[in-house]
Image 1: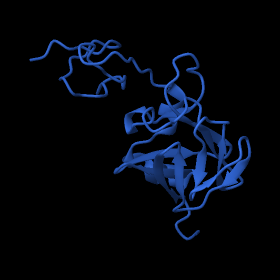
Image 2: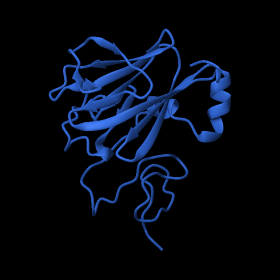
Image 3: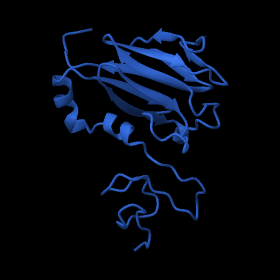
Length: 175
């Protein structure tokens, strides 16, 4: 049995587990990693379990599915919600942020504050935050600080990290 314990709640865990099953803290083994990552509580609020999907859809919330390097991530948005895409920044833990480090964000040129995806007027928008390596929608580079409308199936590229966007909404009859 391993002597590894969650630094937050002291629950034992096995080597290789990434998240504490009790408190949700991201786990790491200091013998194999020198990076400590904090999870932003605002981001946890936006991420939901599959069992909650029908409840959320009934409330008119919208889901953005990011398909990145063979993995699918889901972020649930309410009207007026924004989430920053980038890499972990321990100096500004107060903003809703989706960390792309585990997808190779650092190696692929993703900035700490690369872009913001927002949901307003029943549509998704992306805004480049003057990133070093640029934000591209369907291979077209976006101007910094100008919102661009996103469509279902668009290819979003941050630096050289590609992802495909899929939307789902509460009203199944809507397109």
